Length: 337
Ligand code: NAD
Image 1: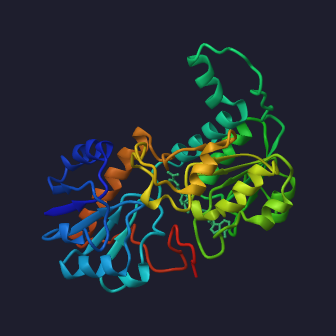
Image 2: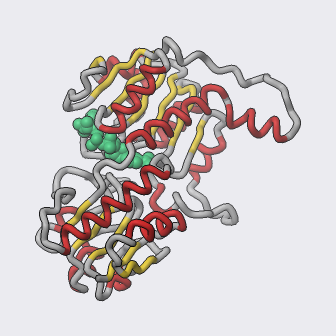
């Protein structure tokens, strides 16, 4: 059985080849992303494996459908880049709902510690034999208040980490499932928290949840962490908040226009995303390239669940990780609704 695999990186191949020893599928690895133009590469394939920044719109889905591909196996949890409505009745969509919530939660804390203790600056200074401490003052996380928006798998892991640091945690979710978190209104989180971390999916309700208005309600010097989806934050409003010093710093593992940028090397190009360039140039903004998931444990789980999804589909077993059309919106879209 043949499988097309889009947006392949060397680390994907290592973990999928190992897991595929159990199945013996013919996996055709492609570096290109899945889109209407590249769907043709799935000719003769039963399933296509895709990732967060592939452009799986109506045209791409129709093209795959015409080629006889029956399943798009997302090797990630989020699927806001898939037009689920267009897929209905044409092609099944599966995902990896949970791989390692700890990987992303730990990355969020790593970014917070880096920002707060200026590790990014200290690292560069000492490499230059500069041992000055000026400008590196942070604050104790112990005793500070953190607001966690979204207390699913990752948000809950982040709540545990913050509790371990002796922080006070306020949480907001539309479903209150974490019995260790103290739930509060969004307004309370915006107005009382020293740090706000986003762990909810991108939906119609959460699009630009961090905007001029919500930033206006926040404490001066607030830190904002986003390891979830870029469009949860209005990037221009964030930049304005950083420039005006309303916001004390931001940790971004995702960016609303990341689709064509993240996971690739553009160091030699001059035509860059102006807003991202400005954000990166700020001393108190840390950007990583959607790497929260990138741990050995997460990659092993992603490979095993993705290939099991394909096996379930091809053997006509119940596809337990199938996703269905609901109100998720397309990532990176400037006019979302
Ligand atoms: P999850 O489904 O376990 O949890 C999401 C939580 O958000 C749920 O509890 C849900 O009720 C809540 N939620 C939904 N709508 C909400 C709203 N309007 N306001 C507040 N909360 C709301 O998902 P998860 O595994 O914890 O992942 C969270 C997000 O992290 C994903 O949506 C994905 O976008 C992102 N993610 C990022 C990476 C990365 O590498 N940076 C990796 C995996 C997932």
